[in-house]
Amino acid sequence: MGVSYLPVSAIFTVLSITTLHYWTEPSLTELKSDGLNRNILLHPEDVTHALELLLLSSNSTIALVANFVINIYLLIILSLKGMFLPLVVPPTVIQVGSWSTWLIVVSSLKMFQALARDRLQSLNSSPSATPRSYFRVYCVLLLVISVDVVWYIGLN
Image (tube, rainbow, N blue to C red; front, side, top):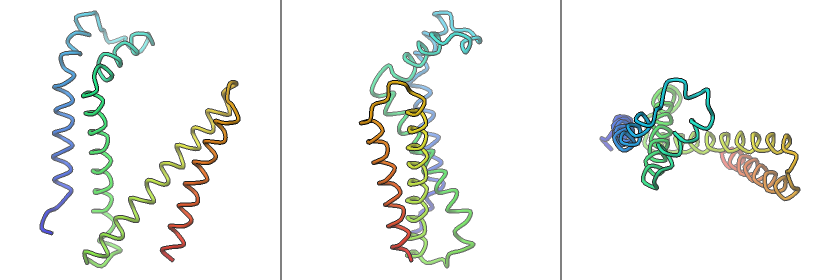
C-alpha cells in the first residue's frame, strides 16, 4: 500500500472544480450578457435565475457538483485522519483501517443527526407540517441514534 490517498484526493478535487468551472463558463457568459451585475444578492429572483442557469441546467452539472462535494468530503476526512491518527494509533494497516472506518461512520452519523435536527426545527416553524412528516423525521432520527448506540456498543 504505497499509495498515499491524500494527494490523490487533492488532485481529484482540483480536477473536479476545474471541470465544473469550465462546464459552467458558457452559462456564466450568457448570464453576463443578460445583464448580471455585482448587486445580484439584492434581488432574489436574479439569484434563482442564476442558480437555475448555472447549476441546474443539466444532469451533467448536477453530477459534477455532487462529485465535487464528495471529493471535498473525502479530502477533509483524509486530512483529519492524516493529522490525528498517527498520534493515537499504532501504524499497522488493520488499526489505521479500523480507526478510519470508525471516524467516517461517526462523522456521517453526527452529520445525519444534525440534518434531522435541522429538519425538525424547520417542521416546528412550518404551519403546514403534517403528522406524517413529523413521524418520518423522528424515524430517521431514531434510526441514526440507534445505529450510533449499536456502533458504540460494538466497539466496547
